[in-house]
Image (cartoon, rainbow, N blue to C red; front, side):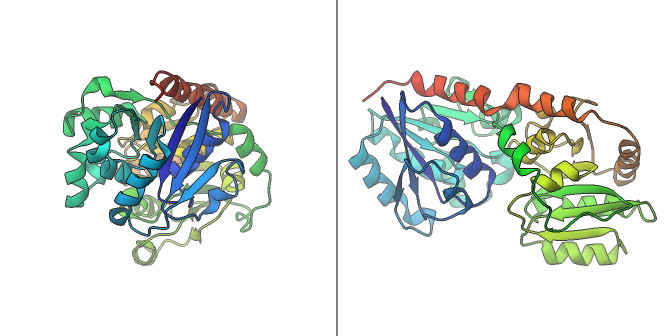
Length: 357
């Protein structure tokens, strides 16, 4: 029986938090004993975490202050595996790895590092990333970025795509929408943090070419750029756009949307694109780095094109909304490649190959 110490800041709503919760819940407990270290015991996914899982709360608000508390937990617990579930935490862990020769350290990278990491102190810690015994990359784009820009040795990197819990999504997608879509319109959905990275400014510019069309855009999410985006909407004189804010269960919206759009400038491996497919909804995705081409099967569950060409993207929205798409085929396209059963087996293979203390 191997003990695995997973480390995250908290369990607030986010891709990394969802994946780690799913992984911990469904790991084979006859082979592995997962424990979870949190900097702050809070967040939506606490309710979804298996109640038998031990949570170690170090009550630390900032990553820079978490270094020694994490060090002490590793010394006391003596796990077989330490699993950094979030990029910046993994970066901070990297320098201490040589001091624990009997522990196998795994980092699950969460972003295209060369594009996402800008703070000098975090960049400094990434210099020690080769100390990790295993690094999980979610996509080929992420793997290539680690090799080419961070000079990570290729034999340390294993690509494992993100899993999706199709059954849970199908069940939750049947719940009632808090804010119903407008009747008489083709309803388009986008979801994400309202930040530059997610490219909602480009999406609004695309919709400036759809004035007068019977198409309504709904954006789910909060973020620092909300005021800028609302101002841009007003400047562009777009009426058929609504910001819905934070919604705990987005799946009824994904299921009932006529089209999902991913407008991001870059991604790690977009869970929301998997979730859209799991509900049977067709997607248009910007041609950005982050495994988009590994998720989208062209004209099966979606299309990939450049959102920078606003006019062409707008035309493709109109064309796509006038086409029929097979919901079952879209669902199977995702389920047959990214189901939790398939992906968790890949993680268990990695964990099983490590030596026990």
